[in-house]
Amino acid sequence: MEASSRAEWPRKQRDIHNHHINSTVWDRFEFRDGDIVICTYAKSGTTWMQQIVGQLIFAGANDVNVGALSPWLDYRLLPTEILDGLASQTHRRFVKSHLPADALVISPKAKYLYIGRDGRDTAWSLHNHYANFSEDRRLAINEAPGLVGPPLPPCTVDVLQFYRTWFAENGKPYWPFFENIRSW
Image (cartoon, rainbow, N blue to C red):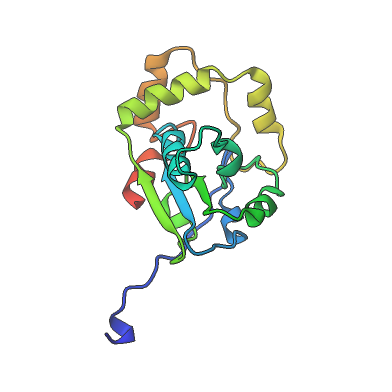
């Protein structure tokens, strides 16, 4: 096959920054052969898939600490030493991302799993998650250095209002849902 007719790997087209996400961490992540990147929109089965992947990697071990082994790499508040921790892992690594494909570094060394969920279910789950934030947690997100864009507002207690706004304004107050799905 001629080089000009080979498909090229997608390239990162942009960075995304908001109250939760900083996509620039992917620019510093050093991929290894066999890495697994679990990609979803928030509240769409990420932890469930991390648990499945962790069980496969560790042969069904009962004590797989998915949260420690498989961080949300583009989370804005993630400590910078997480990359060092990932570099020291000797097993097959698996990490998660909530980025659309065009804001993520795509490496031929890695396998990418995208999990989609019906937006109606995602919105209900996201409201439940968000409504249970403590005010201290919300303030910590908003007051941490590096906030780009509007802060995360308090969650509306009216789940129907949240649901309608989330759909009408494409994921507000989080990030665009439909863009994420389409990109994958």
